[in-house]
Image (tube, rainbow, N blue to C red):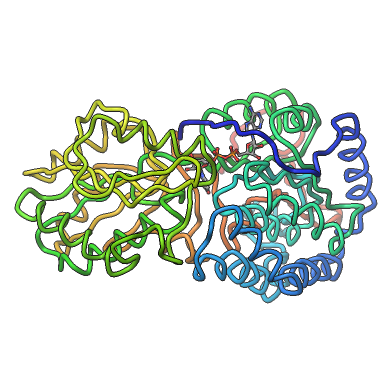
Length: 468
Ligand code: NAD
């Protein structure tokens, strides 16, 4: 992850920094009241969050359209996939909260061992701007289900959505336990001085280090959901038009501002011209010849990011696209032909609608290029050859990924979503979110009856010969 870009704040709802400490302590008092011990209370809060999304669907949608010009699919996914996450939690919470029985050594008999899923306490949830509803509220689902209180910090960059969060969430959730703090660096810095029981941060690696350092002061555990350069390896065993469509969809969705978007393509040399040409066909069939007028093509979040992407493209061989308009936050879908491996384009996460292609002769060359970079959040392989898939998987590492697919692994609730190395720490999704925000409390429970302890247990230890 790279490129923290600061933008001028446009939100009206910035939280007064002098209030932040008392907001956090009042949320902590709410948690300490013990109300979240009740599973019915948690369900009630989840249902309230559900209503908050569905009763205000138009406002949420308007927000993401104003912020990012999100297309119909993304508008739906921001609201409905979050609702689906809530429904999954409501359906399964009674199962999730059950203590898990484990075997204990015979020497303890009669005894049982079990793991209680205990709430951690107060969780700070700092979210980014690119999927500003779901990346804030999906973790919240597991935070609530696991019985925690929370402070939400939406991104000031997606300010229309952040206004919605500030206005709508407190109307539905119990304000004693769930608070929203709005603002940018100053407000987040103040927040990070407070003690939390867990912090989840989604965003770039530079800020993640600031968060981790602040968390270390209080020994607070962190979940860091970051980014990176997610590669695609494509060989000549695949149906090229099918692959091109899936690639172009995953890359240009939300104008490339997706943490698991394919960042660059490594294509076998004998299909290299064909895959680039088919990607152009896919772009035309999705967005027409002029993406600027397509209602399905998004916009860059702000002028600074538009300029940042333009600077990344500069000096490279543009195969298709390259047009941009900083004032209108427009960046044409762009394909780049064989950039230098040490170029800025191939060193920083692109996080925009620019897709570089690099040819390879042997899959080991592709693996080498991937391994010269930090471990990415996702890695994609397009190949019908199982040996090639295995070779790439076994010789690389990534947070997650897909075979003959892009991006969609993140919507599979059974698959924990998170990074590895520079792309993040920890993961969440469905039940995994509940587990991330629960403490595993291990209990050994023995009978209190007399006469159960073997004589060798207690001192003095003469003729000690314990067999385990
Ligand atoms: P951003 O700039 O909105 O930052 C995220 C949060 O950090 C915001 O709430 C912001 O207020 C806060 N912040 C910014 N600077 C800060 C500072 N100096 N101190 C304290 N807090 C600060 O979002 P971004 O980082 O531009 O988001 C893009 C990055 O996020 C990309 O690298 C992308 O890959 C990654 N990302 C990862 C995931 C994931 O789930 N793994 C999802 C989306 C985005």
